[in-house]
Image (cartoon, rainbow, N blue to C red; front, side, top):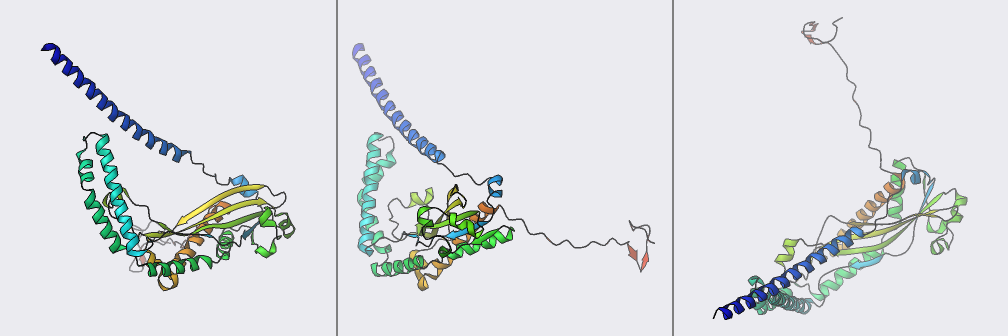
Amino acid sequence: MARRSRWLLRDRARHLHRTSAGVMMGRAAIRGSVLALVLNGCAAKTVPALSDEQRGGLGRVGVVVVDVKPTAAVAGPTPLGGVGGGVLGAAKGVGLGVLSGAGCFVTIGRLPELCVVAIMTPYWVGRGTIEGAMKAMPEGERRASQAAIIAAIRDVDHQRIASAIEEEGRRRSASVTILSPSSVPADAIDTGSYRGAAVQGIDTVAEITLGRLGLERRPSSSSDRALKLSVPDVDPMLGVAVEARLRLVKAADDTVVLEKTYAHRSPRDARFVEWAHDGAAGFREARDTALETLAREIAEELFGAARPAASPVSAIVDEPVTEGGRCDPTRSPYPCD
C-alpha cells in the first residue's frame, strides 16, 4: 500500500512538473516575442538631422518639388455594404472563439475566462454578423465618397509646400530659391543630377517628392481593442496622412548630403463620409494644413529653428512718488529735485 502511494505521488509530481514547464515555456515564448518586437523597434534606423556645419555649407538652396502625383492610400469602410460588414463580423467572431479555445487548451483550463469565451463562440458570431451588417456603410455611398477623396488627392498643389518652405526660409533670412520643374534639366529628376542648377547660382538643391497621401485608421488603444473583440470596425475613424521625401544634392558634384522622409498625420479624426462631404472640403483643408506642417519641418531641417519674434519692450520711466502734486522725499526712491 505504501509503495502504491509513493507511485501515485511520484506520478502526480511528474504531471505537475510537465504542466508548470509548459506554462513557463509559454510565458517565456511570449516574453521573447515582446522582447523581439521591442528590440526591432529600437533597432529602426533614424536619419540624423543636419549638423550646424552641414547646414552652414549648403549655401543658396534651390527648392524643387517633383511634379509626380502622390500615392493614394485610402483606408475606409468595409466594402459591399451590409453583406461585407456581416461577413467580417462573423469571421471576427469565429476567430475570437478559435483563439480563446486554443488558449483554454494550452493552459489546461487554468484560465477559465478563455474557456468561457470559447464556449460563447456562437454568440460572438451572431453578434458580429448583426452589428457588422447594421453599421456598414452602403456600397453606393462608399464608392461616391471614395471618388471624392481620390479626386482631392490627385489635384494636390505641389507648389504649396515649396512656397511654404520659401516663406519659412525668408523668416530665417536664408538664401532660398524656388525652382520650377521646367527650370531644371529635363533629366535631372530621373538621373538625380542637378549640375545644371549651378549656373543659376544654386549651391544645393532640395528635391522634395510627395510620397503617400490619403486616409489611415486611427490606432486603437488597448481599452478600445478589448471592447471591440467581437464588434467589427466596419466604419473606422480616419485621419489625413501625408509623407514627403527630401533629397539634398550638391549642385557642383551631385553629392547627396541628406535623404529623409517626413510624415504627418492630422490631429483630427473623422468618419469616411465626413471627410468626403461637400466635395471632400474637410479633407482638402486638412491636406493643405498637413503639407504646410511638413514644409515647416523641412525648413527647420534646412535652415535651423526659427528665431522667436522679439517682444516689444515698453519704456519704463522712473519718476518720484508724488502726493498732491508735491514730491514726498520720505516715500520716493528717487530724488525729488
